[in-house]
Image (cartoon, rainbow, N blue to C red):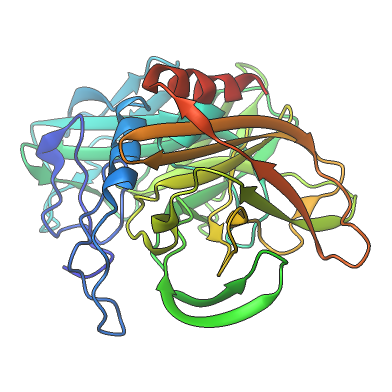
Length: 372
């Protein structure tokens, strides 16, 4: 199993991939302790505080819904949110490529709001920092016992999702989580520097626009108020999102944790960062994760920065800063309007002082992001 081989677990433990899947599904953390990087270095073990925080978030996040269907007949299943998934007859294959038969289990996980994007660590932004307004994120698994099934190459699961988009067609995106190693970055004054320390920047998910013409867009059906699209692969996150942009100038935003930043964040691998910073643009169903850590900061300037020149000046939105240190959770929610950089500077900064919170209070703060 290489660095990108992971497992799916949680509410359906039977779906352990056991090396069969080469994509990272961060619904449950991959164990990267002792994993070899391409340079031959050994990845650091997960930080205990970060691991506790992420296990807590996942436990309060979206869960799988499961359905039993006939592989030969095919069926349509409806989730609690009202979304319909149609599995065509004879569309599922065994790992060896032979047609599946008998009863199979379809497991669906959906993310439809900002809070669940944070709980599941599934923010919405492209790989170059452009924000995406989400009409839903979807993850589908087909299994029979402990055996994972795949879709026939010429087949797809058809999805019908209630929605009221402004556009008649919405682009589709596929995503996986990647682990990267950097030796360069920006310091607390937004100056590019290079250091010898290995660091990890975890995006939560890396969205790439679907290129298959048959699956590249969700189409709006005004007769029944639904977005209709195809999922042409399983065990992969799919996002129905449209790019949104403003004509205002862009800036780089640095988020300083004046207090309660866990320094293990900069060297955390596999998604167990003990400190995190999220941003929700006002009125937009989107969460942007600031995953780039500030290099070599002095005390009071630890934290994160956005992609360079990616955030609109004048953009209103709400930040949520979270930390986990020695068993205690810390958080601060702050609503701001992104300002113009000061004369002579190339960035705008926002300072946070996360305060101790109970687990229940942290859940409430995250859920309140839905209304921001």
